[in-house]
Amino acid sequence: MFQVKMPDTNNRKVIEQKGNITIYEYEQDLSTNPGAAMQAYYSSKMNIRRRQVMFNLDGEHDVIIQAGAMQWMAGSVSSGTNVKGVGDLAKKFVSSKVTNESTIKPKYTGKGILMLEPTYKYLIIEDVASWNGMVIDDGLFLACDANTEIKTVSRKSFSSAIAGGEGLFNSCLIGNGFAVLECNCPREELVEVELQDDELKVDGNFAIAWSQSLKFTVERSTKTLIGSAASGEGLVNVYRGTGKVLMAPL
Image: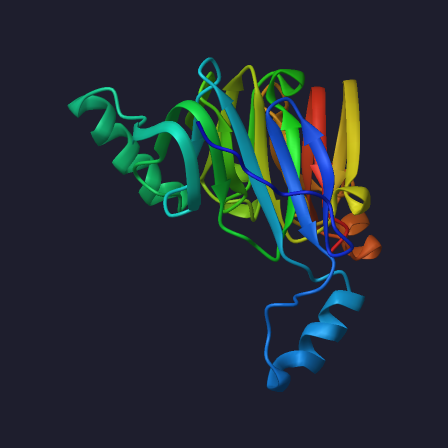
């Protein structure tokens, strides 16, 4: 039997809660010293604040997290790996080299509380099922429900792989459950575009996530070379089909 007391205070608040996931934000970094007090004060004013993810494990929803992200856990919670065998380990090793993600991501099971390390990045909870296969940019993954499969997908066209600026390979989250992403922009600043047999053209690699069902290519901004030169845009990333794209403004 255990009891965790983390009530909301003037400094620590719950900013989002979905399923068994709770995100805490600290209004100010009070665990500081006089020499760093000024920096901590102005960081808080610019919304640069510590945030933490807490999972309430009920024995039915296991969690997979990024390696090294666990801070503490309470209750009958145990950790293992999401590796199913030697072949799966080899596959994950190759995937880690092309996506800059950790080879083995720990899996936590049981009943209790799992708290992750604090981060100054913004934490975003996404419903994986709503994306029908969610392709994410490198470095965004923090945690997900164990029912979610993490695959590595490659570019479907030579142009998107070479000139797209999004890398040759990306991690793709498939299945049900929620995923937590670490992002440099808050969710309210991100632009979400839903396509229904249509297309989106983006000048640069601003997309941080998109549906696997979308066809991603790199094309000229206009149909002619002269038109592309006159517009000053040149090549653009094109997402075509039915699905969603999540873009950062910067």
